[in-house]
Image (cartoon, rainbow over all chains, first blue to last red):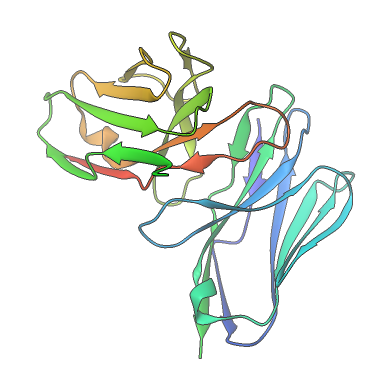
Length: 109
Length: 114
């Protein structure tokens, strides 16, 4: 079967750096997405990786290793507004999105 | 632009009742999707549509029906609601279904079935 694994919850301090990991086992691979979802709101797009390596976008970076079935989302200079769930999703060989259960990130002052 | 709009935002049903969730998008997107989101689980695809007049089953289609009579609207129907259908429902759309396409989500509809 297809599977996406992420930690359920993480806690970090305002101003610090946090890394959220995602491992996947899917039938084929056509890209990996990270979405942010604040409580009670819709998911919003953060990043997309299809080739190995690091994609940087402001305070957020996303890394992909296809050979290891692994990605991480790196958040720098954490702000209170970064408290949210972070969803990892992989597009399989049929271009269907397989979603992880999400990682709830709690930021403490 | 409104983006993707879902109505209603909240609804409480009794077992056996029927209802329809409406999703409307004003971005001229071809592809539209209905997902459900439950605690501890990833988003699960219920049904999707690749264009006006077409629909297809997703991962968890049982107990739901959909229609896409107009390109901008995608309706999700529950003919006979069950407590297992208590969930938050998200509609999403995208222009085309290529590798890098990004989904735009609606704000969600929270449904409780008693």
